[in-house]
Amino acid sequence: MTPPDEHPVLRRLFLGHQEQLRAALGASRGAIDHAGLKGAASEAHWRGLLETHLPRRYRVTTGVVVDCRGGQSQQIDIIVHDAHYCPRFLNQEGMSFVPAESVYAVLEAKQEINGSHLGAAANKAESVRRLERTSAPIMDRGREMPARDLPPIIAGIVTLTSHWADSLGPTFREQLARHTGQRTINIGCALHTGGFEVPESCDPGGVDIWPADTALVRFFLVLVRRLQRLATVPAIDWSMYERAFRGEA
Image 1 (cartoon, rainbow, N blue to C red):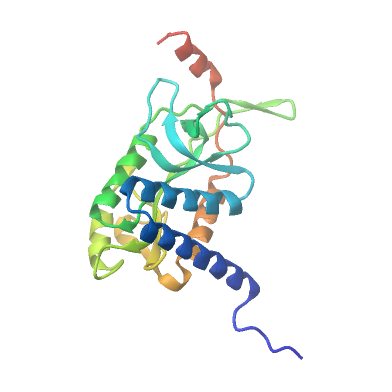
Image 2 (cartoon, helix red, strand yellow):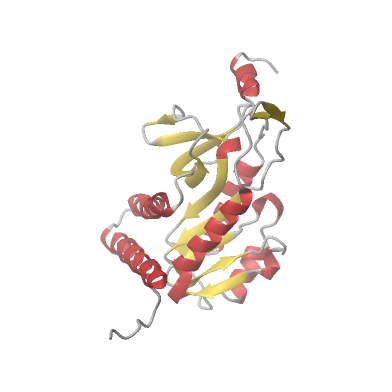
């Protein structure tokens, strides 16, 4: 009779993905000297992981988030957006232009978590969250349903390691707590260090931390849980985009 395995099969699968990503990011960090190319490789590894394992209702890309008033975000490393209603024509030469209404989450990808990179992630999150988002009524089995309330947009940061000697300890918590409101960073993962979540009912001072041995597993499950709670993005009011195209106020 075969003895029971030390770890359940799902845990082994997740930990296997974690080790593959660690190896890929570590190889890029060690082999690529150019900072820009190193960053691009890191972003690609994270996007590939999420694109492969998130449910098919989501699409993962890089690019800029835009709105019906002509506003646009900073360039975002990882955008998780709606796969069904977001128009595919807003994609040119690998750079996507994603309507703000279609965005579920935005993530900053760096080599390490530090104060500067947390600030960059907060700036990018704010640049997306401040955009105008429309919400139109929809038809459901012949009945017009009212426009949905706008759901919150998740913001996060993903890295290989942490800059601080105390890892994701007091210094990290202090830095994270500086970013509130539209600059709030909700979730994060540093593969060699651990991960974190700011619970939806708490301010940044109430952050939950988990260790390195399950960093990616916990991060992925927290992301999926939070995405699930957002349900479906609201219907885009395309008349507002049409008005902007015609140059109307």
